[in-house]
Image (tube, rainbow, N blue to C red; front, side, top):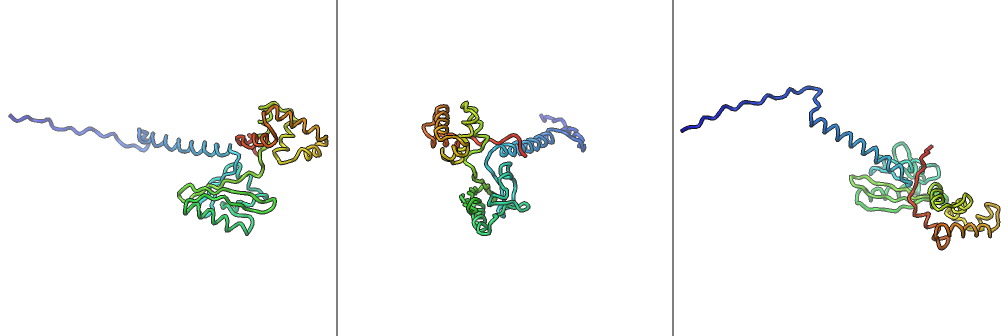
Length: 224
């Protein structure tokens, strides 16, 4: 006996229209939206870090610079922005910067580079990220930012005068220099330092300064 099979019937195909918003296009749109949102949040996150960070290509073209970097690259920094390129300000630094970028992009080597001289001296770290792209991290020119010190002072209940003394200590001033700056006696400053140490639990001035130095970097919400 021979079984007869029913003829196969082709399923009608849905017409393709220009405004089609089927699953494929919806997924693609969501992916693009997520990528754009991720890039926006990543840029916002980098702007909240109080270290200057510049993403550059092999030939020093700037791909992205966070808020701290845009602020740091002023007339007092040995690096500068010329158009879309990151360049050394002094002729003697050009070769050092070029070599560090080349070693990072071509050989994947990290480098700490000293640039500038005198009051303009600064250190930068060059970190390879792959695809001939490198991250240039600008060293801090101050031990601690004023906003971080203020937040630390409020956290430990320091008075406004004690906060100013703490800021001066973090700037590297000695108690005698702080006394002269504020036109008070040395004994007064020593008493204030003792009060700061008691409130923060620091054993000495070095430990006190270290407490502030390792604070998370805080960027002000008001940005000129």
